[in-house]
Length: 210
Image (cartoon, rainbow, N blue to C red; front, side, top):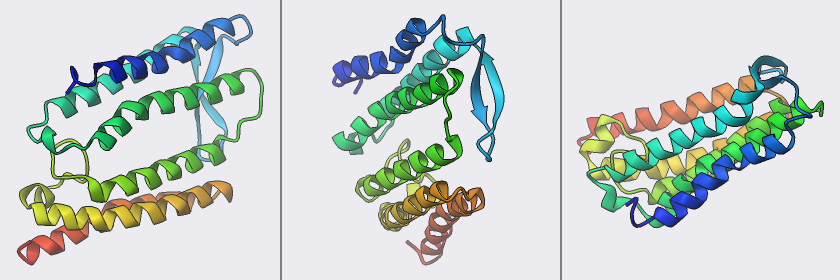
């Protein structure tokens, strides 16, 4: 899989590292301590040194990107991965890295960043996108809802992912709204529902012999 998608892998890897270039251009304007963590209220509660924030984080994201690609390429059922899902995996970390680095640099330069609104909206949008992909995701060991009952039954896998697809799209929109209205409790409750409902549904199917 890596050989077949080498070009896109190189392109996405370069995109992940682009924030380093931006950080170098802004180096003299950036403070020595850069905000890299916010609490649920949107308040900065964690800082990192400039070298780690500018250089370390993009390389860390690059490592995560390659780990995901390697895990997917060694999947015994990798032939079940569709091209659309593979492209989603390739572009996930580049997009996240560029967005988060942009927010980090803006905050470091003294601009107001409403992270408690922006992050839930982005996460909700991500769940909406994933929810659209889930029903099309065929049985495999790296992408999807990988629990014993879905992995042991293709029918269980398909039904669970159809349900999860609709659920994640709806919950994704609710999470986006929770960010707009700054309600972190709703965010947590919805994420819990997204996890538990497919799990319970798959178990019920299993108990019925599916």
